[in-house]
Length: 356
Image 1 (tube, rainbow, N blue to C red):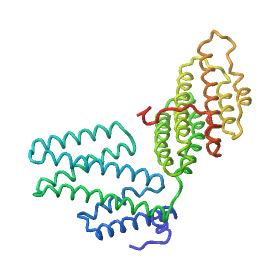
Image 2 (image 1 turned 90 degrees about the vertical axis):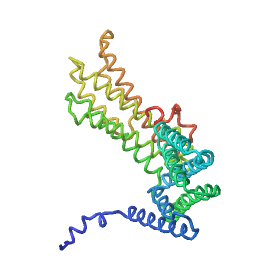
Image 3 (image 1 turned 90 degrees about the horizontal axis):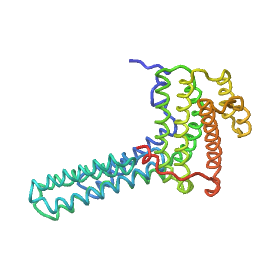
Image 4 (image 1 turned 135 degrees about the horizontal axis):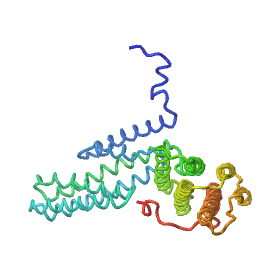
């Protein structure tokens, strides 16, 4: 089969960017180094070192560090559990199986209870204990318990060290840059999302778009965790970034509530759609201010204070504007590197803990 030049240019090899090639090269070298060092140290199963180097090879620095810490913690915890369980119950097969099942069950529960790298650490500790403990049924010397456990941990650490070393030699993009870009893009997309949801019709595309926005905000929480390990600036701003994600998630709730009000309003103001379009256009400008927004939404102010439906919509729309402008100002301060004490954001619990 003959391949033309245009066809070759459409293959993944030619379409890959320089960053993707650097990541592939870094990952390959790290795996080869891990396998080489494992053979040099005469470890029992060198391929585990190569596997660890591949698992922790994230495209970003924070991803490598956070994944490495989770893998080291899980390996140490699993190896310790295997030593304790096998050392005390290996002579009683039924008790050994019961203890291993209880430990794996506990790790499964903890993995479901936590998120991100904490969940990964408990998951890894469960099957690390199984990998170490079950082959011990054939040993004849009690000292082999320690040899098997420490070999497994050494293989994991060798792979992690090789992956971290290659990340320092061939660094890639910063997690903080990716997080700030994602926050700004999501901040702008919320206006597009509001314009879509405040349409009078109801379609499946609107429902899927709303779920997609919420999913992207929750996914950005992983970027926040990775950025925490990439630079001291984002470690100082971690609580502020978490609160900003909370505010963006709250904005989706406000947008959804305004949509329900509009759909269930038999006689909305005639100029409501025109005012909403002007409002979204004004909020999209970089220098939007409260005075301009107040002048735009002033025609929607209810004339009759007893019209509770109109009054509730008016107050909810004002709250949306206030929340969006405050998020814009806080995002600008975070991006410009302002001191933490100058950014007034109420501290909130972790996003995964609040919405998990």
